[in-house]
Length: 119
Picture 1 (tube, one colour):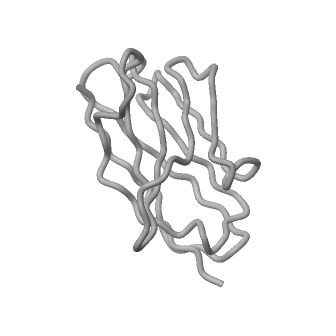
Picture 2 (tube, one colour):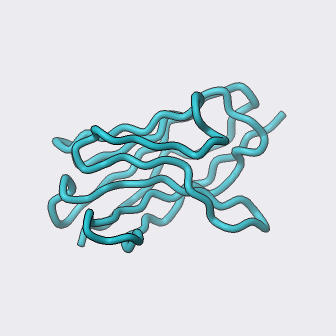
């Protein structure tokens, strides 16, 4: 399995931008579909964005569509989440996760990085 470490979180004002990064190590990163999820205080974890193994398929939660962009660099074993026009409701712990194509659940998770949006 791969191991994942998320980074790049921080405190930002509404309307600002942050770029999260997820570094993978271990088995071949390019074998994995990748996702970003988030969990706000008192809420369940929710899906944010998905990118396929080769980067050709992307999908987003409606709440972030048009503001967030997921990307990956398989040569660097990295996946990114560019977040623009941040809103208060984007405040959460963000997690990257990996899923092998034949599986329906994400079974490898990073440790999470806090994103706080202030007014």
